[in-house]
Length: 329
Image 1 (cartoon, rainbow, N blue to C red):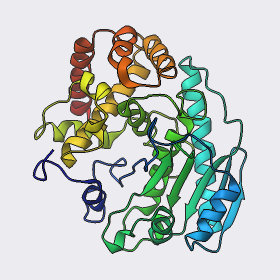
Image 2 (image 1 turned 120 degrees about the horizontal axis):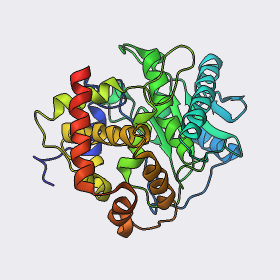
Image 3 (image 1 turned 45 degrees about the horizontal axis):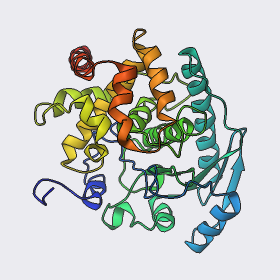
Image 4 (image 1 turned 135 degrees about the vertical axis):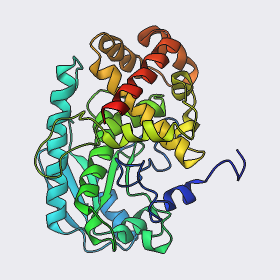
């Protein structure tokens, strides 16, 4: 990968400040799993409340407020109103998530302990804690994170970022995408210590993105932004085969911005098809169950072929589905 062929993470994340946000988090912002977010890259150990509070203090984030709900604990320097709205969104997401996956035969269970959320007043305090510059300092900034290694969800209040439009929508979509990641690894759907293809992780995250700004909404609504990406980005980039997405995580982690966003859109489309096609749903359940037993990537394609069928046919079906969805926009 040469400098002419790819952009590094700083430049990629910096695209958000320059307005290049259309294909990322449901068209609103870009989100990434920080170092330690992948299987095998860091020890899996939950941070507890005291450790998070200590880390916030050491980063100079103050004053620290906290708020609890039935299944979550939020702490950070965000206003109490943002803490409350974030926990409300998280609880609504959990309700919709459980209902959606149980209706499809998945044995998901609510978290057995409060899930931790750090909620920051703005991108500056978020950047202090995660050791990143603010958006206004150059834009090399994630807009929300879920860290598999520590099980911590982090968000900030877009309403306090200068010259940002649709801030309330960005807040909801950040919680929806990253909160779905957190739920998949805390309800029995996926295992935090297992080898899970990034396209599955991000496919599920993007599957949870589209939610109403006000009030509850069902999980798995049509992700219009991802469908739009499927239509537009294929004019500039070749279709990425399903077998490649499942076996090569780097496709979603590095490369030309548009191609990575096409990979995200295809990952969304794959998960959407597997969860909503009655003929493919049983194989999807078995496939995700098999992934929980894997610690290395060597079985990826064999597991996919065993439970999802011929991958060339799956790829053709996914391409045809992408065309139908794009035409329906």
